[in-house]
Image (cartoon, rainbow, N blue to C red; front, side, top):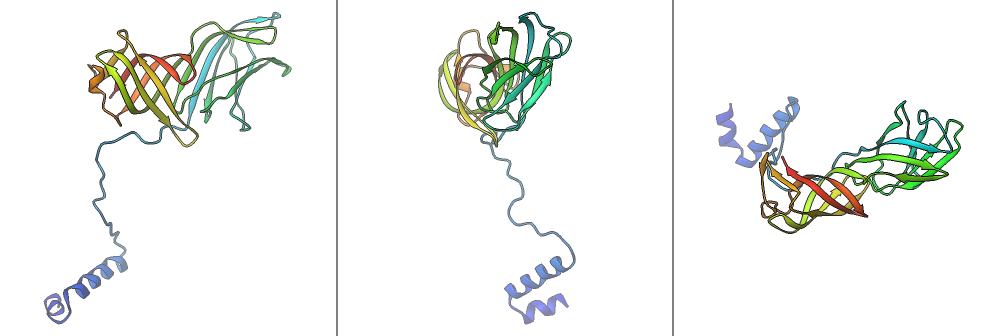
Length: 223
């Protein structure tokens, strides 16, 4: 039957008939290669960020347990947590941007507010915090871990900086990642130098935030 069909009908019509048999029979037909294994950047990252810290002191005197930490981005829905017996809190949610972190006592009286830089995909460690007469006083440098794509490499050996673009559905920001002799540069578990970090590669950055959109890197790593 198939041989007769090919002799009677043009080749294009036969191909269409076979395609029709696959569709009617319930078979999935995929067009294209179906596998894009090329390189490139990491694309959008996680839509959940983390901000954590520890209340170590409250003036006037107040128990460090039971304090509400509330993080709000613009006019969005607040994300909250309540401190444990050690004063520790951890807030998780879609909070990338420049949210306000506000603290409340158990009667929801404000104990102070501070702005926080939260890059897309970031885990932010505020360290120890003192709440004093309505003021929020961080006692440590803010530590951060985040992922992003290298968009500029202005670094030689172990000195200079990368520009790293972190993004997800909430936010996109370019961070200046400063490299020094103390920065660990790692690719696939091995020591590397700045020149090994190509544009478009996705990196994990760990370090401290000395100013807005700037990180002094402790490590920059490509898995």
